[in-house]
Length: 341
Image (cartoon, rainbow, N blue to C red):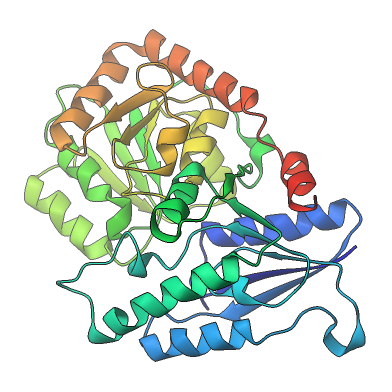
């Protein structure tokens, strides 16, 4: 089949979305399909740029560009799922969150307040035309139902390089690899360090806009002996850091999916997440494969101390997480089969 995958690209801001988008293209090609990735440049502001991109995508006819018939279009992101095709499957990674669950009437710009109902109308209009509607997770599917009245099937896919994750004997540290940004809430983990009663360390990997704030927070709390911001790391370093960790913390706010949860499970490590963390809650079973706590530093610290003081239990939880991942049958073959149905 000739297939076009549509998504966005935010220049010079790589992230997990790139693994998802490129992974889908690669897997389709491995199954013998001819694939083009069509990625529209996206800017979060000004709002007028978003409005123009919505109109551009909705006006883009991909049935036979330049006379070449396209058998299938698979769209992943707003507003790229607005393109025209008679055989369109949409696998929603997330909508424009600023117009939905992250919208705040008190802080939103006038431009966003005006654009918000237009985005809702666009989503309902374009997503209703899809032959099949999937979501990256049940969390994303629930948002589609709550805000747009649309039913979507959760479709899980493996993280990049899933076959390369491994487990080694635990060393006394908790690992959290992610972009340093507000929604990822590394500050909860830094603040938890001030409440630890065991000598466990915290390694926070990644870079981002909150770096200076987190550096200052570590200094203010006097926890530099407990918390290290290790910055960027290679794939090999990431695998080793997972493999040797005591456990993994992943406590973002209302995450869409969250590769970190799955990467920890593949590494046979227990995951500490929060009750409002969204996607991770679909995988972490409290007390069995990790812990689900309120987003409070004291509670996070208690669970970290528990893992340190009960390392046989921590290992058993990690193994249970690995087994749970396997039992869910998370595989690209399943994803491709459903997207092409």
